[in-house]
Image (cartoon, rainbow, N blue to C red; front, side, top):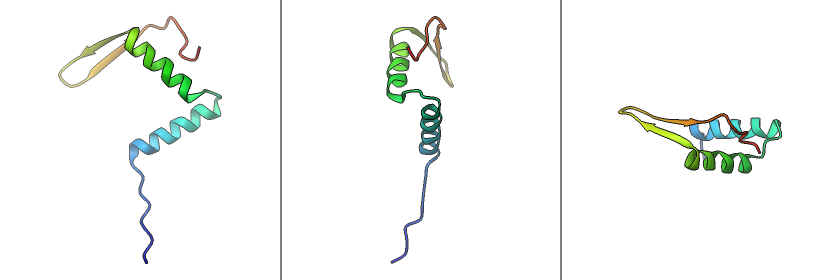
Length: 65
């Protein structure tokens, strides 16, 4: 039986690299994601345009708190 060809999608690769870099810097990915989601939902200004969506977040706090 032939071996199945290895396939990885760009999004999966980018996530794996990002997770590794955060791990190597001692950043807890789950805590970071929760803090970032909270900031986006409750403390950001979202501005849609015809071709993109901009999300502005104040620099007042550290997302790793």
